[in-house]
Image (cartoon, rainbow, N blue to C red; front, side):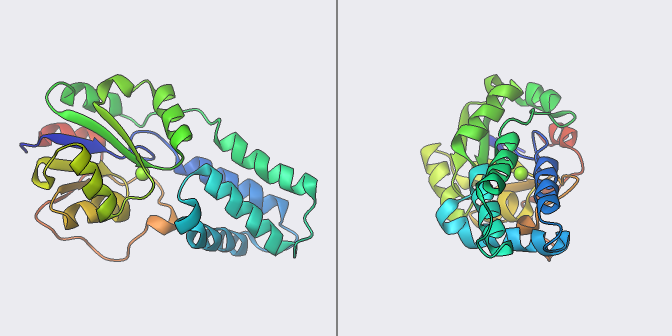
Length: 227
Ligand SMILES: [Mg+2]
């Protein structure tokens, strides 16, 4: 492929993320196991998250507020300060999780660095994503870091305008078909999917993608052979 910019998603593409959220949700479920099943509680958190997305956006702080709202609902507004404190602690712990790179990530970036403009395009909390990028020590490989409030076609179109890049010169690589691939294909770019071990419910899609500018890989190291 002859491209100008190669962009990478961050969470579950460059480093592990979703298992930390799974663990946080398990802790939350354990707090309220006398009131509802884990499955019910997880469904409630997800509902709150999706409902809150237009106002709160993505990331740990939004997730924490959605957990608190779920707890209020579960307890019929009878949760006390100590209970709220425990939920805030779950969120704070997430903000301090170590950044563990996925296998072969650094090797791929080393190979592409200098040949292409490399970009990180991620959503989530601005401060948390900058923290993770700093802790990952991957910063020097990237020409540009973009923390988006969402990954819609419009968000990507605006980002490409800022980068002065035409969609046909742009490749996005990520673990989410919904956020990293589909919107990019729809605006004329190239999308590469690398699945992660587990996918957040919200990011799942229930159809196959067939598109001339879509490539499905199984490991990030396969990216090297494409460029
Ligand atoms: Mg991701």
